[in-house]
Amino acid sequence: MTDIILLVIAVLFMLIGLLGCVIPMLPGPPLAYAGLFLLHLTDKVHFRISQLLVWLLLVILLQILDFFTPMLGSKYGGGSKWGSWGCLIGTIVGLFFLPLGILVGPFLGAVIGELLGRRELDQALKSGVGSLLGFLIGTGLKLLLCGYFCYEFIAALV
Picture 1 (cartoon, rainbow, N blue to C red):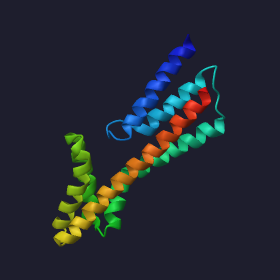
Picture 2: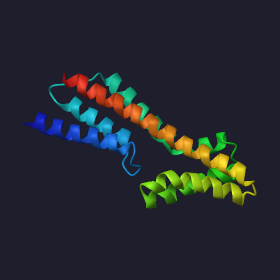
Picture 3: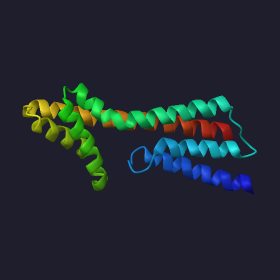
């Protein structure tokens, strides 16, 4: 009976984890990892400890990287410190205006930051596009990792 409960909760964590890749308020990869870990606790599936530790390290690294990818994108787009700070502030403010705010926030924040830093509009827009691309890359990486976790989950049960 315990295995069934753990399995049901694990499946829910995996599904919510996938959803969390595109909804910023949900930590997608950590939830998907928790689903794999719960599956490991059942009598049916046992992953190697090294697998669990590598997956945990990937989740931690991706969570850190995901926070910084919009700022890195802004920097790659030629942005200055003003754009990076604007992107960070825009990301935080965008969380209050979901779902569109999470896309528009980093972009507008970077553009406004660059304009406050006395950059030309075209350079500010490049920085904003860079921050948007950084956000999209971070989302793609989260989807890849959670997709891999789903694959491992299903493969372990089959």
